[in-house]
Length: 282
Ligand SMILES: [Cu+2]
Image (cartoon, rainbow, N blue to C red):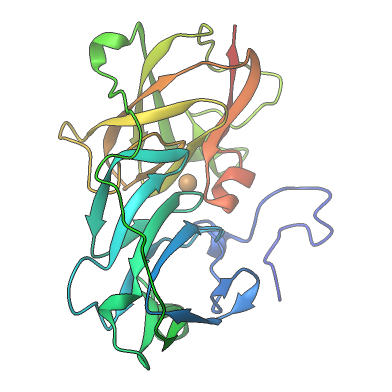
């Protein structure tokens, strides 16, 4: 596999060729390290914990064929834990580093069916992810509870501080770099100092699509371009899929530990080309 690094030794100058500034995408989809694997399943409910671990690829996951009845996926968890209530989804848009914890009920398929997990954002080789073979019947006494955990929705009035971070490309050192608030990552610079225990609203502005990931702090999506959160924003999260040219607001609680943590775009090439910043919880 060729990785288009500026420095083939990966020891010196970070970053990739200009052609790959928007991120390196492969042409083989791996699941748990295997290309396009299949899994034999019984005609029962399965819990699937899905992580998008690609460098730069977003997925729109769907089941082909779709189930005869019921939703394709019942989402029970987000990036950092169970939702308050399950959410029915026909498709899952998942950006790099996001996680979806879902139930798929294979009793909606006759035994003998092959069900492909597809990627509707892909084409040719990247349009398929893996396959499930429904090979036999089995007893299933499981159910999905209508209430999962106590979930406390945060509101704007909970926040004591509002900050804005712009995730934009800009000129730097004669070239272009991916930066936060027009500054490339500097491990020694602190870009935000939340108080321990504080709740803050962070406004996140983008030029192109960036999945933004916070270390330490969990957050809820408050608004997207002034509107309500989207269908994939339920629960506590640590990564938000930000479309290009938009402004979204998250509300985060800085609990647990003091000290220095990073936040960054989780497109790995953007991150490695300096779209990262430090916060210090004080
Ligand atoms: Cu990015």
